[in-house]
Length: 303
Image (cartoon, rainbow, N blue to C red; front, top):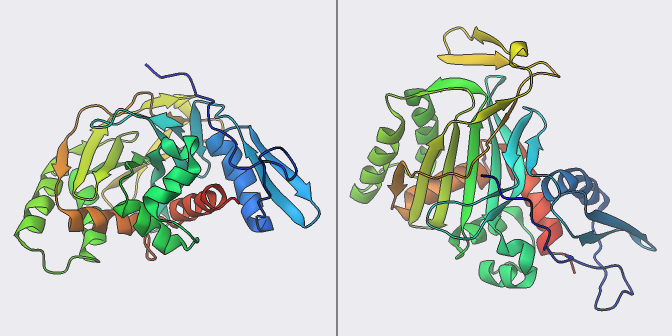
């Protein structure tokens, strides 16, 4: 059963002159993104102060809605999730979508340890982040003792072989000649999806408990809205079934936390290769990386 949204995130920064407060200059482009994505991801408690030297990021106080929406695909993600192997909730800090051959295949959301909301300074100390460069920040987050999870929700039906081949292509960028440990992990990854038909709405979680431990969890999602507006068609020679969604039509949402673990990958290099595929410089999901990077920039580096 979905937990009610929590509202105990202290202010990331306060208006200049307020007791205990400080100023936090943010570039106008970043402010625009924070206003758009911050309200969507972190709720309506995002405030912006117009100061004498420009727009300043002021305050994030509460979460708001239970779900966040990836606007391009209209997929809804829970604002918070609790994953197996970790007792504290994770909070969404970015959304995006994957497109291949001009076809949208899935939406994605990135979650990090809820402690980001509770103590930004402690979180920065954990990750060792001092200045913001998106590549080094994502690397630091991977190596840090901070639980993170990538949620993927399919907006197209895909067979297991197609999905695992896509993951293999991502991994192959980092691992050209796998050793025995990597081969074992790659085999585990493939066996998790081969032979399965992954329906539209299936959600897949890749959860990094630590660099050498990644959990794979998959489950069905719920459809919300007018299902009559969904029209299915086949893309020639693609093996992917498409679902066209009218503006008033279907939205997909995940109603429950991920529970049963399908597999565990215990190779740090394989786990990093997957992570880097989404958050490295040559990401397969630029919208997710950009959304996450800019919101983390605003949150972690607020002065």
